Length: 192
Image (tube, rainbow, N blue to C red; front, side, top):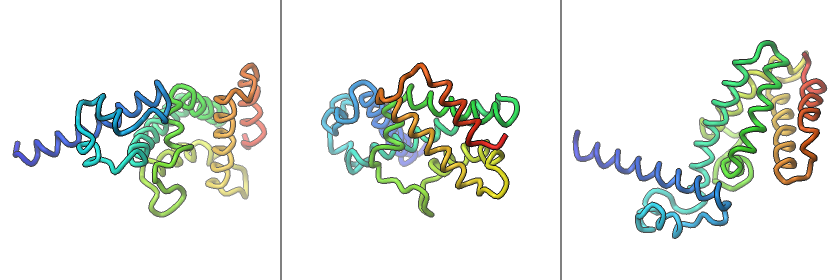
């Protein structure tokens, strides 16, 4: 292995450590607790080393968002693939999405709530974000209904899921109706 290969590997490992530590700190104490100073202390590198990887917190949030988006796409695909039939796939997708938002709130916020400097719904949207949308579209496109653009339907369903996730996490919706909300969403929006 060349010196350059070793340095690239070490750089990638430091970057993974920074992102993992930011995620951990954000999940434990919230994104306000994530500062370059605290990250530098936790990973035992200087702040200039952090800045050699990321220009600041915004880019760190973006890196967490991209990693999280890939995880969300994997979770949605796995649950949908294990379900039998269109209704079951859509319900499984919805549950996987909402479960992700509950289990990984800081990551969910990095993807959908915080400014990580990432473009959505544009030509320069990162591949991980496009793939997350594609994971939703794979199951939702088949239940959009005749004459309905599958992408637009997926956006509407996604917006509904995001609203449920956000309102539920904030304690604005009574938890005892979660399943009923999901059933209504699936049965009233999807053409099954």
